[in-house]
Structure formats: structure tokens, C-alpha cells
Amino acid sequence: MPKISAVIITFNEELFIDKCLASLDGIADDIVVVDSFSTDSTEEICKKYNVRFIKHSFEGFRDQKNYALQLATYKNILSLDADEALSDRLRESILAIKDKWDYDGYLFNRRGNYCGNWIRYSEWYPDRQLRLFYADHGKWGKLNLHEKFLMSNGATIGKLKGDLLHWPITSLQDHIDKMNKYSLIGAEEFHKAGKKANLFTPYIHFIWGFFRSYIIHRGFLDGRNGYLICSMYAKSTFNKYKKLRLLNNNGVGR
Image (cartoon, rainbow, N blue to C red; front, side):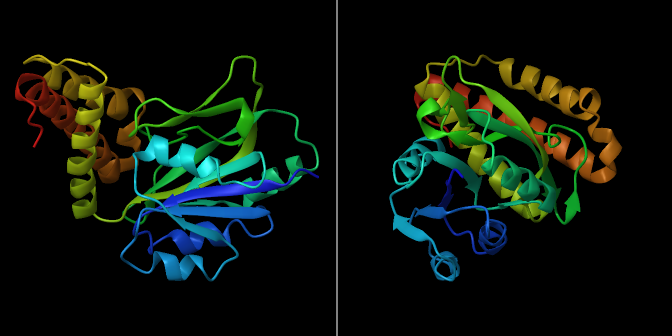
């Protein structure tokens, strides 16, 4: 039976890391937590579980996750964020393939919780993720904010039943704070990659972002929460390109 290493990166994750680690019971044979020097009780919570807790300066989400992969004992990897947990149905699916691992990587849906409510539409669901994979068949790539595990050419990918549960936003203020933080990170990543923005770029992305998430992806069916998610997504996109334009012009993104 193949053994699985669970890999998690953390920074001040005391709200949900307990849920995350508890959901790995009976699934992971090895748990690696790479922490970028948390100042809350993240370390104390982690040490209640059988984990290897390693402190490492944050290098960006993509690079931090690639560093964490190097510390895993086994090549079969389950990669989770600290505010994620396996649902019971997903646990069953993973246990089933531990007896018969047919693919190089596995996709499953991620369901987001917004301020205490589970979201069914917009770009939050099904939000398919590739988080279970054989480490030698890919690596974390793309931008350091919207990182994805990229499988090598010829790698096979299957699909598992069950949801990865995600608690990204706990309050409206939390949403605003993260929107401001990630729009700046995104602008800086785009600037490093040589992307450009003109006067109209932020407005075009704002309109298209809201239309795509609220209408095409049916965010309106989630009521008030759907409207908030889609409007904040559009505003975050607007801010990212506005900050990118400032960086393009004079190197100032704040």
C-alpha cells in the first residue's frame, strides 16, 4: 500500500490548522508543516499531532510549497493549505486509492466557506484542485500568488469524489484585508513577469471579472454572499491592475 506525505505551509493559522490536521488522521503516513515564523499558537497546535514542524522564511506560495515538497518522506504527496480540510467523502476516496493508485495525480473539488456559509457557485465551486500527486511528475509553478501544481508531459490525472473544505474568509473585514494584500502581491508578480497595464486595463478586468463570476458562473444564486464575493473579486482585480500600472510607471505599488 503506497504511503502518503501530507505537506502544509503555515503562517498564523491557529483558526483552522486543527481542522486541517485532524482530517488527515488515518490518511497521511507523514505530515510536514513548513511555517514562516508564526506568532500565534500555530506551532503549539501542530505539536499536538505527529508532525514535523520546520521553520523557513516565506519565499512566496509557489516557492514555499516547492521547498516543503523536498522535505516529504514519501513521493505520494497530499498538499493542503492550513485553512483546508478533507471532507468525509474525500477521505473515503483517498483511502480507496491507497490500495490501488492508478494515476500520477488526482483532482477533486474544493468548496469554500464565506463568513460561515458554504458557497455553491461563482468561481468558488467546484474550484477543482490537483492536490494529490506523485512528486516526481511535476512541481508547483505559475505565479507565487496563484500557484498550481503542474504535472509533467504525459502524466495521467484522475478525479476523486468528495470536497476539499476551505475557510478562506471569516468576515467582511477579513475579505477587505486579504483583497488589499493579494492585489499588491499579484501586481508585483505581474510586474516581475513583465506584464503591462494601461489606463483602461483595470476597468476592463473589473467589468469582465464581475460578469464572469456573477453571471457566467452563476454567483447570483448564492444571494447576498454571492454578490459580495463577485463584487470583491472584481474590485480586487481592478486594484491589482491599477497597482501594476503604478509599478509600470514609477515602481510604486502602494
